[in-house]
Amino acid sequence: MLDTKDKLKDCLNKEKSFYITRKSRHDQIVEWFVKDPSVRIWQYQKTLRYTEYYYCQKGLKKLIMYPICRHRRNRLGLKLGIEMVEGSFAPGLIIHHSGNIVVNGWARIGKDCQLHGDNCIGNNGKSLKAPRLGNRIDIGVGAKIIGDIELADDIVIGAGAVVNKSFLTPGIIIGGIPAQELKKGEFHADGK
Image (cartoon, rainbow, N blue to C red):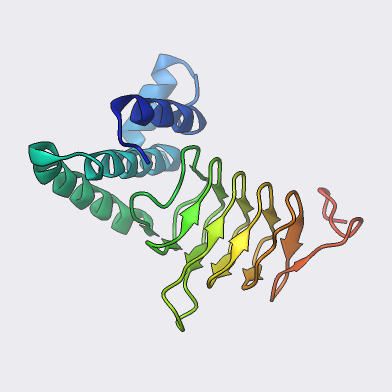
């Protein structure tokens, strides 16, 4: 929860380092001018974090700034195909590709999560309960995480997987439809 200016600043500094690299000043200006995908995703994510910060405030600051930030977040989200609400992700979120990313407002995701695009983290349509994910979850392209489930820390979810049950063992790789733990030796970084 980003309820103080210091927490907001720390979160933004951590997340910005992925999107805005230390290139020459000329390269940075060109990236901002042509709105490279990483710049547009960073603008969305920064607005998401400011929306979360102002949601936690009180009085006039919340009354005025929260709706302004939320409107901007929604507008940017429509352009990028990203739908998520403030407070779902702990600091360290990385969005590799925009487009078709939907996160249920009741879902809770830990620190340093990575989304590779075309992801859904939502309820199963039978109840309003949503997934709870641990820290350092890497969600592959097209992976869906559905229902009242829990995932432990350091889990890698393969591309196209549909996760509809809990996995409480940290550091595993899961994949398939429905998702299953992949045995050692089944997954190789070179695809063999």
